[in-house]
Length: 253
Image 1 (cartoon, helix red, strand yellow):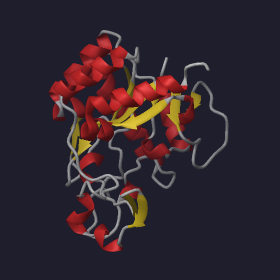
Image 2 (image 1 turned 60 degrees about the horizontal axis):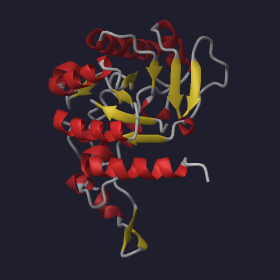
Image 3 (image 1 turned 30 degrees about the horizontal axis):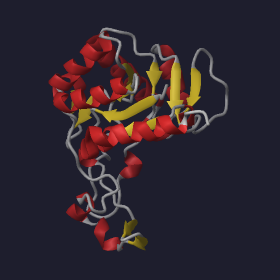
Image 4 (image 1 turned 90 degrees about the vertical axis):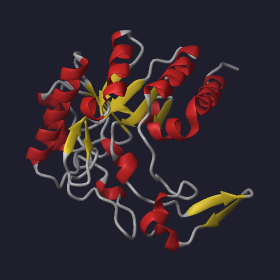
């Protein structure tokens, strides 16, 4: 069976993380894009935006996605950011900001069709998350840096767990750190709040110490790691083709 993780559900990175690609493939050739594109609203163009701007998935889109997942027998791990961050740093819990989507996901969880993971409280460093006029703000769309106070790690893990577990009415035991950044302070908080598995592309940023009571799983151990961006921009047909190719790769010769 193909394993699939879908990140960034509920994260306002989809509106406020602005950056561009510096290379593009045009007529089969890779060309370098000019730095002038990294200014103001030019960064949000889908022609060269490395992230650009897109909207949250609607339940109707999820229905199409679920039909594809069921076709291939895939039960996805849906990594949810517990709060949407407004420009003024105000936090809106995921079930309040996207009530229809949240209810749709809750029903699928109750039916055993998906699993929920914690993808942070904010996905970002609050106060530094707004787009810059020039250059990328990607660095600050990571939430659990070692330079942040221990109290921030504790608060963000605690609040995100409370929001997700109260709404979904089930324990949330898997943590997916935004941008693969996490550290000792994050680990200590995760341990206190019921997380039993961390899935990331790298281990703690500031330590190699083994964890107690928490399993670390490398990203590459999952067959597919995608973001809701791909699903929003390319739709269920893209997912169908992606899963078809992935299943072919796993078919014994």
